[in-house]
Amino acid sequence: MALTTDLSLRLVASLTGTADLVTPSAPLDYPKRVQLTSGFAVGQADRMFSDTRSVALSSSEDLDLVGTLVDQLGGTFSPARIKLLLISAAAGNTNNVIVGAAAGTQWAALLGTTGTVTLRPGAFFCMAAGAADATGYVCAAGATDLLKIANSGAGTAVVYDIVIIGASA
Image 1 (cartoon, rainbow, N blue to C red):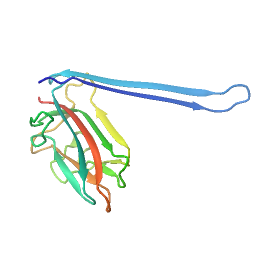
Image 2: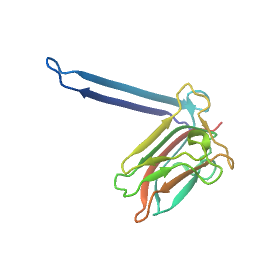
Image 3: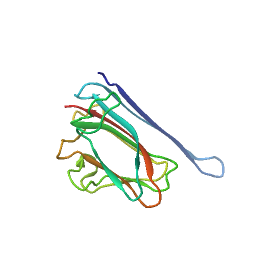
């Protein structure tokens, strides 16, 4: 089984103003790219989990990052390091998707034990370790491997997509 990963992000923006003789502008073209080959060393990853999930109203789920999630080929997702995380809240959500701050054995390498990210409807969050980073964001079974995903309110469930790329060692 081999995994290749290519994440490309390009932010293009232009700020313009008005002046007497010219139109001042500040263009921005900011590309970022991470490419990972198959393996578990520098610039490599060999595990992937992706899913569309739902969290009931006023509820949450703890994703056990090491040992309980099943990948698309039926294998157990068991990374030692996370190299890429993408979470996208469905545009049709009424409530927010809250990421982070599990009650115990938190995956603290990214947000600490109490940090969270709030994803409003249609918002997304992406984190990628650089291709030169051998460590990534460490997780360990039973110790630092729970990623909490919560629904911010009552009334309706929230739906989100998640992609996790990791290295097995």
